[in-house]
Image (cartoon, rainbow, N blue to C red):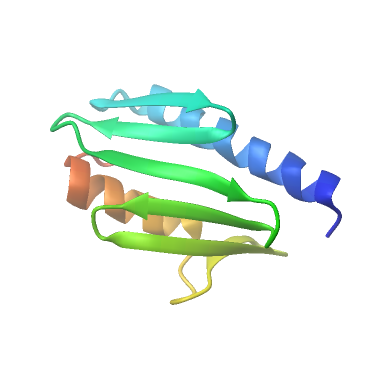
Length: 104
């Protein structure tokens, strides 16, 4: 995948996550600065999503650990357990923040 395509898909993903959080009405704040998306839970803990251009991966950091996602034909897939970004992020938001959000 070209760098331009990777960057476009990453940016689309961040926008979709932000939109899902806004539309959910759940108590979860977000801030996007320099292509890093930080979701802040009501207890003050953070879930951080970053781009790793050198490896063309999306990285997700949460209390439960760090996860690396590769883009394939169906979307972002975790390289350690095969779970999709949307499933992993939904589970982390519920576990860490007590909020139920479905991500696209």
